[in-house]
Length: 222
Ligand code: SAH
Image (tube, rainbow, N blue to C red; front, top):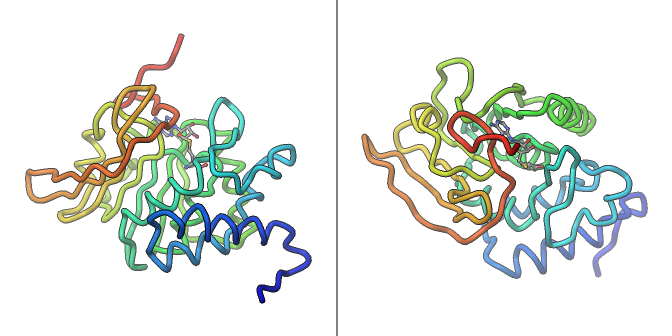
């Protein structure tokens, strides 16, 4: 019999998400499943949206942005093949939910968000969860991290027309980059791997993200 912490009122919904929406599809990485089963997704949402935290769809987080569907968060994380030693660059901090998941599975996360307000909110939620292996930046993430670091993994959580060139430059040899690539209405989730001058790719599935607005993304809407 499954028993739930009476204070953790979302535990049954979280458990249902793991069993039905993640394991029930193709999420097989045990570490990814474990972490999604631990992080309280409701903490990343405004009170009026918390009831929808574990629904199988994206949820608004303000400023016209959304927290991605749990399955997509799990799938992208699984595609990164994290073992715990990696330095991960994340473009599009948003609510910070994906950041929190990554932080539990790698050495350190470097995350960039375009909106100061979202970054500040994410920082406060992660610090209440006692997550400290994250560096935050505000700006155009399509231009990469401000210092010339190399990352073993890069995740772009907003739609791009193609993998942004500065991110490809900041990806280590054999490193993996996951991004939704397409136009602003529909994209394909693609897993890239850097092999010398070549960028090998595997198409994962169709998806729909908000657009990455920036120099190597899309122009802002009028
Ligand atoms: N991973 C997030 C979802 C992000 S939605 C989560 O778990 O909540 C995509 C985010 O990318 C939005 O917050 C949006 O503001 C941000 N974004 C869009 N263009 C960007 C850019 N050029 N640089 C950094 N962030 C950007």
